Length: 314
Image (cartoon, rainbow, N blue to C red):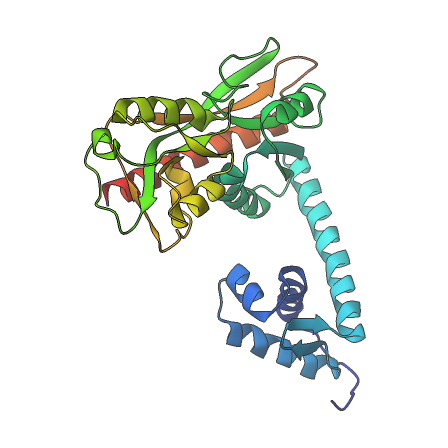
């Protein structure tokens, strides 16, 4: 590409190049930005024309920034940081809650509830900086207790969810049905007893699904013992897809694109998974920023519950 002195660099196109860098390629950047890959390519090409330099090397494995591209992205990150600081300062000046709030949860809750929430808050509440952490169980409880986390989301049937420790408070966030997952080529059951002769997959002891699986297995009348063990719902889906048995997962875990080899069925008697947000009540906690994020988590939970209910009815 013939080099020319740049006269103008469109900030929107710079943001597109930044997305290509962060998401690892043209296609992934398009998905994150909600536009087609061709639209991303066009924006990058126009930015290259404006800068007079090649910014991206298009390779079979993906798009790789050139030295000039890295220079533009570094400038974009500095500008982004300055704008974030400015928005936060303006929020503080207006008396809006501001500060960093660290939230921990399981993979299903991070992906299905918290990640979309954090993205939305970055636009609607610039004073709040939400940090998400994939964690659960005793590790999450420990981090909350010592102040490394401000909120954790946990299932009430999990080992740490059955009782609320002193100095902490639980706030209901989401109730969603438990569902049975089974191979797609099997007849869809209408009741648990239709699965009396199925092989049931077990959940790890202490996991919220463990009690549910134990109850469902007993109610089905199955005489074969539980086999395999999962503590991640994605693993449960993979085991079912491999025709190794039937599993129980929450509806939120079944909203992701499912393997083609599985089907999901709602059956009477499985009950619901209850999610709570837990925070400290000592040492000045929760602060205004944590309470503001908590309110948004509860609102997001209501929205997700409505979507899950529609999915199950459908």
